[in-house]
Image 1 (cartoon, rainbow, N blue to C red):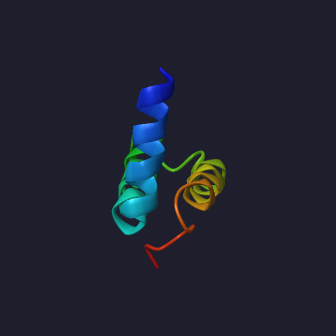
Image 2: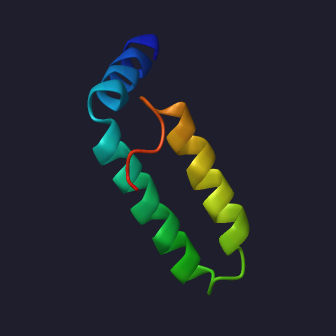
Length: 60
């Protein structure tokens, strides 16, 4: 499991913009599926995840 996590971290570090865009897309999908009822919580979760990958939020 450790090797997988190391590879995932390396990928996130090298492709931060793509990872952030993927997280944003996943957040948008979650918003749609919940009818926007949890938009604030989903946005906070996406922001936190983007800050923990690579250099932070690169999608904006």
